[in-house]
Length: 256
Ligand SMILES: C[S@@+](CC[C@H](N)C(=O)[O-])C[C@H]1O[C@@H](n2cnc3c(N)ncnc32)[C@H](O)[C@@H]1O
Image (cartoon, rainbow, N blue to C red):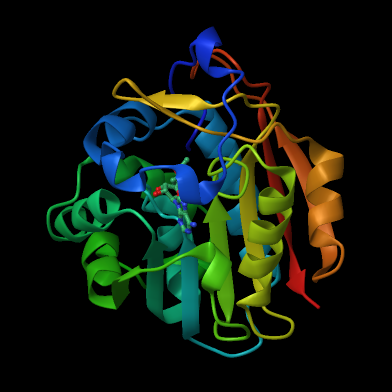
C-alpha cells in the first residue's frame, strides 16, 4: 500500500501541498516496494479478499476488455487481481522513477508477488486458467505516463486505484477530484475497487516526505456518490506500517 507505509515526522504534519507541488520523480520506488510489498502483510491480504471477491461477483459487462490501474507506484497486485477480466492492463503513473521501476519489475518480478498471487487465486476459478501470472501480466501490461487529473472519460472496462487519491495531496478538493476522475475514466457499469489510507498525515519514502489528505469512510462515500453506484465501503485493520494513520479503507462499486 502506500502511503502510510513509512515513517512520518511530526515536523511534516503542518506542511500543505497540492499534487502539482510535489516532485514525484524523487519517489524512491525500490524503498517503497521493499517497505510495503517485499512481504505479504495481513492488511493487503484482507484487501485482496475483498477486491477479488468483488470482481468475482461483479465482472465487467464486456469480456476481456481494458483495465486501468491509476498511480501504480511499486505495487503490482491491483493489476494482478484484474487479470482474468482484461486483455490489456494500463498502469498510469505520473512519476518517472515509478514507470522505470514498473517496466523493470514486470520483466524480472520479485518473488513476493507469488505470495500475493496465492491469496488472489485461492478458491477462485476465474484465476485457475492463469498458470504463469507474472508472465501473463507482463504480456498484457502497458506502463503509461499519465495524471489522474487528466484521464480521458469512459475508456476502461474495469479499474483499480490504490492509495492514490488521498496520498498525493493534502487538499480535500484534489482527493475528491482524483477519486471522481478515476471512476469517470471507466465505461458505464464498469466495476472498480479503490483503497485509501485512513486518517493519514503523510508518509516518508527513503527520507523524502510525501503529502496525504486525512480522510475517513464518509469522505470516500461523499467523493464517490456523484459517479458511482452500488458502493460498498469497508474498513481494514492495519497496524505497524508506520505512525500517523488509522487503518485502511476499501471501496468497491460500479460507475454510474
Ligand atoms: C502512495 S503511492 C501508491 C502506490 C500504489 N498504488 C500502492 O498501492 O502502493 C501514490 C502514487 O501515486 C502516484 N501519483 C502521484 N500523483 C499522481 C497523479 N497526479 N496521477 C497519477 N499518479 C500519481 C505516485 O507517483 C505514487 O506512485
